[in-house]
Image (cartoon, rainbow, N blue to C red):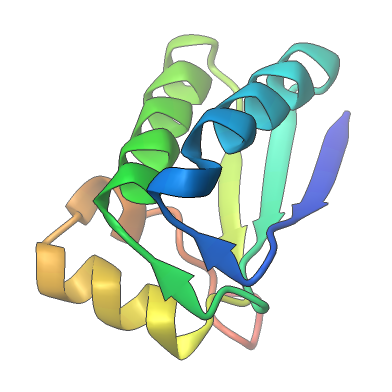
Length: 96
């Protein structure tokens, strides 16, 4: 079963704890997760750490994770920080 979650505009230290809790609960409810990142306009290392944790958790559970429709903010941040683990989960606009 797949679950889709749309993240809000701000994904920073101030939202990291609630984001972690939301994603933990979602990962318990569904095998595969799709995170819609199209609305993200601000992202920092705390949010990236939560996404890296989720990616590792999903991999350990042998479940899927797709980061769908990443905003330019997300794409730039992931590339700038060299987050290869997240880069592998990114889905382009055409679904690939």
